[in-house]
Image (cartoon, rainbow, N blue to C red; front, side, top):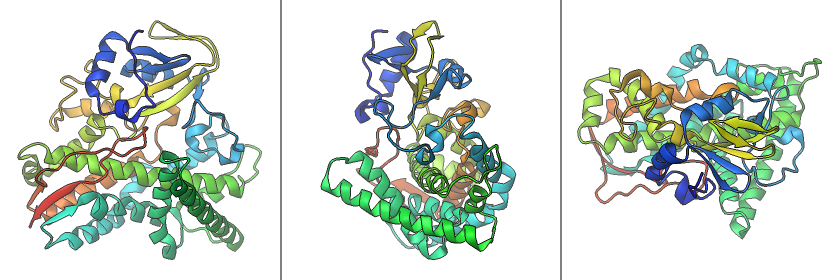
Length: 397
């Protein structure tokens, strides 16, 4: 355990895949700082994920004390039994069968965004497509009033900006805007609860969630799951996923055209993108008792950084894992892009639908798409995630 690797450093988390490859060979479990272990290998990540009693959620800032109330904790910061009912209800809503029923709505959103690009020679595909798409889709599923949908994307952007740029005046202003929108959502929740109306959306799913004793979950807890898990979680990760997907396809000569001719490869490209450039790079757990993982002693109280990006490129699971290959078959689906175990992302079925429909929509509308001359991938600043800040492409119908 000699490797020096800081999973909290944006420059190291995902831009140095050769470092991750070396870790998997030499130091698959590395104590990167006192009491913090980085897990680079898929089998070790899976083992920890299968033992949630020993390795509890570490949250999004595992080295800081969390002073929020329990009702203000996202799914990614809670453990059974507190999170189980809400997670199960959300997972039912996001089931593959139900998401298939939403596919026409996703297709309509994709086609509308693609149509706006017709006639343009060049565009930033993040600003014009990758960013607005998930905000439209998850916004409509969420139960947020239609007139507020244009605010959802800005809310998500402000929330992430406030974390990345913490301590600046701009971050304080962004946080203040988030708090105002939270207050607005509290009123939306209260109005819906009092009205008795229960349309088929995520807000209804949350309102109908009850603790084991039959008590409805609090409005504050509904706000947390609606705003952080559903809106921000559903928007940020999908935007990065869409950006990575098109970047990878356009980085291989002729692949876009091949996909246009063979649509059976589209789902494979989506899975391979999730594997090769995992949008969520790392998640955290904390050991509540002394344990051993992959032969490495883990003292109680340790923080474990589960390297989802590294585990998804584990060559023992996926040969020539450093390559982006849409023909590798079922091995692509063994990625960790959606986490693993009881904390598997509830929105995974929707993300897959969005990726497949988005790619097909662009293939339908544009015979030729290429990275703009001189384009260079620059990742977002939030250390946990990987996605391009912009994706400049040329278009030809």
